[in-house]
Amino acid sequence: MASGNGTVGVGVVVRDGDGRTLLGLRDKAGEPTVWCLPGGAVDPGESFERAAARELAEETGLVAETVEVAHLVLSPEPGVTATAVAVARDVRGEPRVLEPQVFRSWQWFRDDELPDALFPATRLALDALATGAAPEAAASYRLERT
Image 1: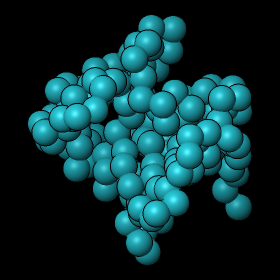
Image 2: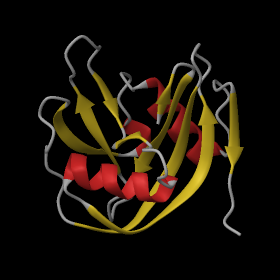
Image 3: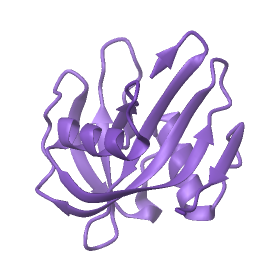
Image 4: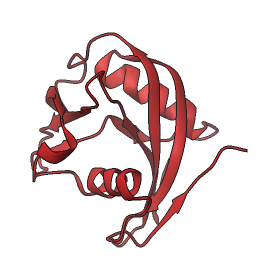
């Protein structure tokens, strides 16, 4: 959901059987080429979980049985961006490039081999998930289901 003041989005963390994280090489015209999590804007009236499952399917063709939101991260840039960090579980399929105007490829990375050129929101999301906080964020909130 975009507004004049920023955006509300979701980044989806998908891990394979070896614990590697799925990242896409984002190569969108007019923007720097970076690696990022599947994800995008939350539509009006849509939950974070529904947005995460939708974006994952639209961008990669993967289908998640369940999605849990673990963190909410606010970016430090002007025009604050709020990103829900969602973890997809029981994922079916193989990742495919379904939006070639945005992504060049999908690739699995071990935590100790993440690329340097990460989309800023992806770096914040992965930091929050790994450590429970995102020190470079304006704020980060660990969420628990009730």
